[in-house]
Length: 577
Image (cartoon, rainbow, N blue to C red; front, top):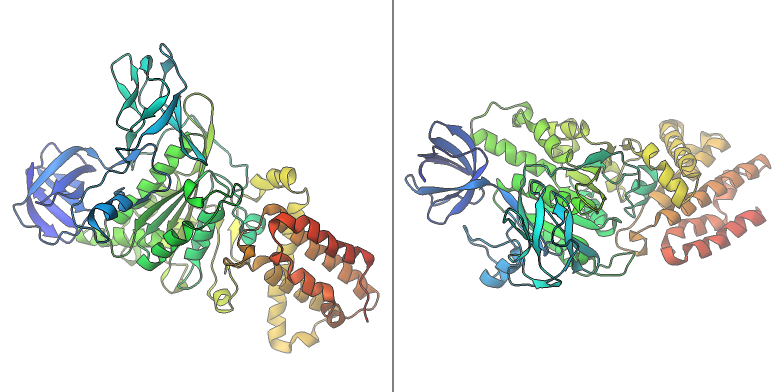
């Protein structure tokens, strides 16, 4: 036990802390505010407190816990809403009402609920870290696999039969007397181990055409969505968390506005999972650390989320984690660094900004999991970045670009033109194109990469022609260039633009490919018509142009049938006049 010597915002310095360790969790003051030791010098400890330090006094007690900040992992995580320290906000609301008090504690998992456990091992079996010893049907969409903790091994001396148990009751006992429960703890800053890392090979289906088709993200990949104010970062991340075809999705609201987080939670309660039709909350976890919450807890919220993601990855699931936004996390590090009087780096951010971002993003990946039966799981990480004034040269964006392998650059000019999602096709990129080509070939069509490259080439040509148009006007262009502008506009408006609030909110990869095939088929037909003497203004006025523009309004379920009608019209031949 120590005593407070100094208080400076969220930073507390305590005397009498000899024997403590870095990253040890402590309780500070009469209200037992949670904090974490981030520096030691002799018997004096520097503590960052996760809650408001108002009212703390010199001489108040500081109690050590002897362990680091941990995440509680077990049945009951799915569908939950936590703060950055994994306090269950729903249970706190039931106990305390809508306003949270400082120092209040809440268990992450429900201690009273009983889960139906089905054993998968028997007495005498040797088990080691990662082995599945039983299953619990947590939700209709997620089978929770009860695993031996990674650092435990032994022979099963006793295993309980099929039945209903709480997370605190043991379900197996090993020969050393160690009890295995359905829940266990894991330090949030310590990556969970795996057997081996695998190359990404499957597409993360997001339902957003510009991501799936033009700049694909692979399962186990890492990407970033930087953009200025009002460009649609939050909506883009919400779309990912809503429609990504993964087994579990984790949404971290890291320093964002409270009304946005409330809107996310309200909308997710009403949504259905596109494949099964089940409520979407049956595969979602939310971590709400809004801008009015303690700034220090932002860092913890990010690592809490990635630890949960690794836990479900170890069960053999594909997990998507979205963080909105890492800029707020970096701003928290800058504030704490100032309190600690650290040497500032560029724009006041700490010198270790890049390594801190890496420690988060690099925990993504597709892996072969520990234990039996053999399983392959993945964690895909996508983080939003909020550069001030949409200046991508600022430190957080630049350090993020050195780490991620897919960039979805949001353009203020596109947002001002009401083109959403406002992802720029000229400055975005994906390094996973070759990795997911085989997936597209096997599941959709062999010509995906050719179609994609052709569309991007047309959009690039349009950007170059726009410079000429600004000088001499579109009428001065040759007919072939006018056709390029027409097809580029069709790609932009009829394919890349996608409303998050209509039937077009989710687009399957098959539908996206058929839409692009239709536009390219029209392009080929228009070229032949021009060779026969047709003018672009005549082609542009054809009824089929309007039909192509309305393709996105056709539901996914009937799209293949309805698109045949448009193709039939293209095959029969277009007639001018």
